[in-house]
Length: 212
Image 1 (cartoon, rainbow, N blue to C red):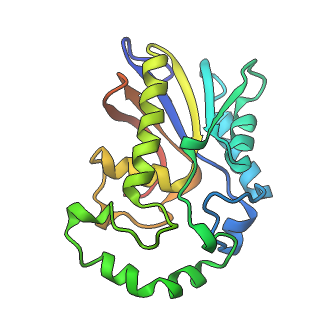
Image 2: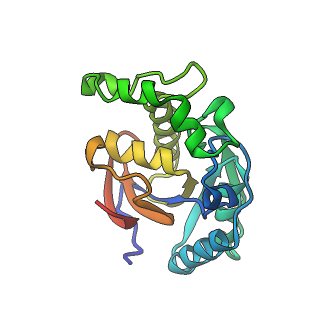
């Protein structure tokens, strides 16, 4: 793994949190709390070992415990405080949170089918329900935070821990992968991408844990 930072750019190590108990049971998590599982802790420890020689100037995470705990594990003995942000949360699923994913899919099967028929430029803003965040709403807040972090930390290495939904939509937004070719679950828990950014644009320098 390359450790150096590119001059004039912020280097962000964007990580998906470790697996949770709800992930294992296929329960819709969204913005609800679920404990990181034993497997999730091991995933975070593995990522932490990969990053042990990187000098981070700051660490950020979603304010949900699975992301925050993942960040704390990866932090190891670094004398840094993990800064939490609601903008880095996963998608809000409203009343479907805490219920099995099949409940969500069955209840919204007609809307899910309808969404697949809309023009590609309308897909991200399509509302499945008034209480469920769209892809556009997710990426707008996540990109806002990532750009802010990058602009504040030029010439620095930064760790950011977030969720699968934000990572998926980030990859689509920057044109790394087409939405229709993205396979759900293809970005593993504890997986990461190394980004370089000037606070406006992003490029991927390295990636581990995604199937394309």
